[in-house]
Image (tube, rainbow, N blue to C red; front, side):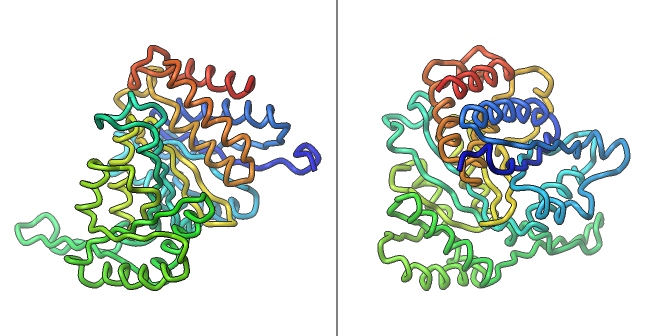
Length: 358
């Protein structure tokens, strides 16, 4: 059945703060071009949650938002969150972490794909050498917010931060990594922990990984401590296809991966609960120092929109967006961080035109 004969895909748009308010409109422009090209129907609803709204009336994440998204939307596109006018960026934590936890978006999927060998800082490495995905556990670990202060602000202050790892949480992310590898035709999964030092939580990771890998005899497996993993990513990234690890280590490893492909401006991510409404965003921050200057790279946001297309079943549209980004880099139609001379809006226009004419 042609898409126009079915109901439209319902997408929530949260531009966020700083450069998020510049790159997300470009991603939406490109998404609209892809949908039109493919004869798809799409319904977009924008939410103004961010620093401006928080400073105006104290609104962060409405209490009914998670249920609304589950009921009324197929996916969410989120811009960067964070603003120096908000001490501690409480609004950003409430919105981003609130959505991750309350929607149980337990997978953080971060592809690291080199589109042009000129962009990698590694010598003698080409596109075939850097093409892997970091699968990060997204709702537990040190990001669970467990801990506190004792005698805060005094010479005797004690600060604790607890690393939360549940069997359910570890098992489902490890199984997702293997299933992801099989689905994409990958042959290798590497699990990274620090079980030689983090005795309890990461021993759980190691034991669960050993159990689950037996269910996937067609997939090669490896295990690396996180310090060795990061070194190996720089030394020989070609050995990796899928990396699965905990919340903190996944955050770090995926940023190293972004450095290998040309920077955070090219890094998309998906916050996913398979089969349920999920959230897609560029990895980079709100970059208040360059906000409003029309110089932020919109490609990470565009690729996040492409990931969302793949998630909702628009495979051709996802590929069209990725192909457009690859072509823009090849033809140097980029922002200055990638060596080009175009502004944010001009790159968005070029990508949208390329998708529409493909």
